[in-house]
Length: 139
Image 1 (cartoon, one colour):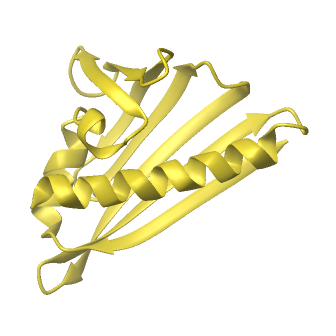
Image 2 (image 1 turned 180 degrees about the vertical axis):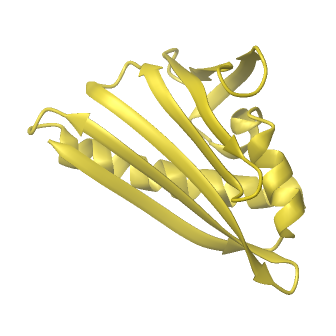
């Protein structure tokens, strides 16, 4: 079953600063409460991001796109302790005016029918927390 999770929030930071943080690939350990460690292997498109979870599991992401003109970052999660067959994430940053930015984080997962709805709910909460954490980190 395919699930699409979208979280969009307006945060109090200028678009250039927000985009710079997103395109840097790293920093998720400061934004997401469920992520304890973060390291990046390589640079730019093709780089791998390894995220250590608070419970001891690991997530492995591969950077697919860093589009500066569109302020869009895309990645695929190719290793995860969660029961997903595929995971594609996209972060889009737009200028909201007055030193604020709209951050839209979209995740498309494919998972078994019995786990997809619960996993989608968990991911929605995690993405919301992550955007809040990004805003706090940029202050």
